Image (cartoon, rainbow, N blue to C red; front, side, top):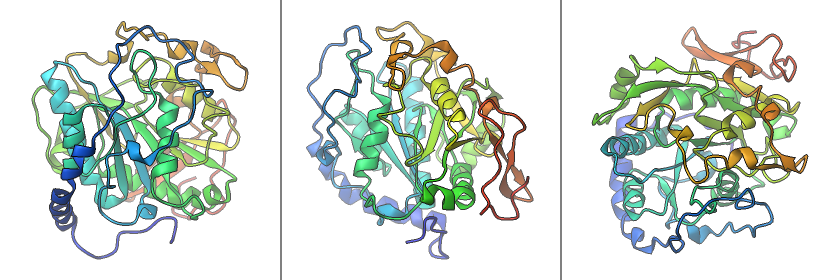
Amino acid sequence: APAVQQPAAKPTVAESQSSLGSQLVNFLQPISTFNPAPARKATKATNKDCDHNHPHQWNASFMVQPPMPPGDPCSVIVNLMTTFVDNADPSKKVAQENTLRAFQRLRPFGVRAWLFTENVEWARKARENGVEVVARFRKNNANTPCLTYMYEYIAHNDGCSASTSRVVFDGYVNGDILLGKDLADTMKQVAQVWGQDIKAKTRGVLVIGFRFNQNIGTKEIKSEAELVEFGKTAKAFQANAEDYFLFSRGAVDWQAEIAQFVVGRPAYDNWLVDHAVHEKKVDVIDATKTIRAIHQTCKDGVFAGHAPRLDSGFNKNAINPRTNKKVSNKEWDHGTTNHAHFSSEIKDGQVVFKARGKPPGGARTLPASAPPVVAK
């Protein structure tokens, strides 16, 4: 199969989504197999909780079965994974339901979403919206999900043989972020430009961007048009506030290179970007101008990840597997969108890429196979 499968002139998006909705009815019953790990009391976490020395368990039965329709997992361009917060904030509930609906709208465009949750109600809602559910996963002692495990779990369980020649991106996104069709449009163009190098394993890619904040309140967003309208007045946030990380599969070695971070706590986002920026084999793309990531601001505000918790300092105590020492602030000082090697923009209605002058990891050039429409 080709690495990037262009949508055929088949059903319209509305028809595809309608068909998907009818198929989902037959996939609600398997939620009875939902079997998360036994609940445990949260305690203060140590930097060993997500350690590589823990046994790796990629058991496909940790997913709520069977996989969601439709069809061929090898046609997926982006695997998008997230986690949800369980609290009493009604606006958080609305935001996360909006996120699930946004995931469902992206399915016809080659985006497959995954929710890692132990909450049976969120699992049910996810399945109703065509989202895969993983009910057992690695956490630290404070019950916060481990990031690396999620990337590796999907790589082992997406249903497409590792021997298949294709371009696929695996990405974590925070659960209160809304993404629209511009995500799929951008990633398809990334695959077109970098695809040959990715398949040849001569270069990998990390796509990032900063977010736009908008208070959500009780607003339900049920269509792409409503999402676009909602995002028009969202306020651009900071270059160091990155909420999605789309890696071409194989771009990094998650065990040998990446510290064992947890999601939703400070430092991991900027460390990941800094690490990729300094890797000669990885091109980092700032897609802020072509992927409008809308942060649905709830009662916990725009700095929710910095609130005091049992494991607030977990990521700053993580061990860098290359140095075997704790990560330091010198390992995330080049971790903003401004440090990316390339940026994306819209030119004549198409996503194009431009190389930036002198990023910390050194100037890069576009792949030799890049189509001539790409701006230089």
